[in-house]
Image (cartoon, rainbow, N blue to C red; front, side):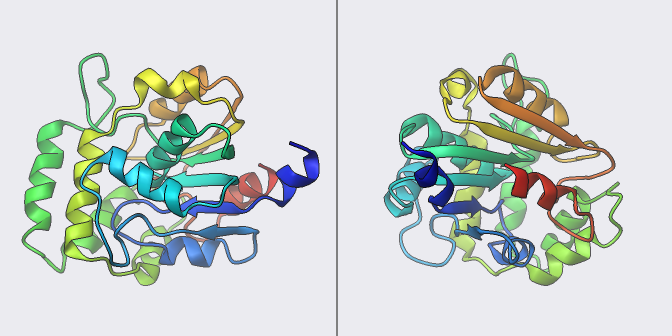
Length: 238
């Protein structure tokens, strides 16, 4: 594939769980990247497994593209690159982990019981849940308006899509296949991320052959939010 094809290929960015494309839409306005909703986020069939969600994305993505993802979106972006290496020209992984929950041999994830409890809570449709959740993953961010930025730009999602997304997070475990990612990958993480440990990105950088790791000091989980230019600088140089 020639350099003009690589440079001209579409650049697609997948959001994280629960907030839709709204926050990313605002952050990507001045770039060539465009956000793409997670499967089922705007209606239609909602995949029940992480594999089915990956396959839905591969049906909707351009034939070849550069693919970015934040958190859950990053997990799905990696899954696409593993399943269809000739279609994904590069990855931009932000606050991403190969396994969101802790498992045997993986103690830097979230406790499974914590995610199970959250899955139960989301079914209560508590209106205060999302501001609390967003505030928690922006805790310790050096950008003071990060949580407000995400909350004010969040896009509503169907309840069934929210529940399915949590099930994907619970199921996803890409540790065995991370080394199969053959495209270049920029891996970006906040040094103060309280939701996904920066060690997850360090682990990925050690295993994805053509990867570049950047840790942004003082940033939390929503690296695109607020007035810090670090995210855009890395995105535009990837």
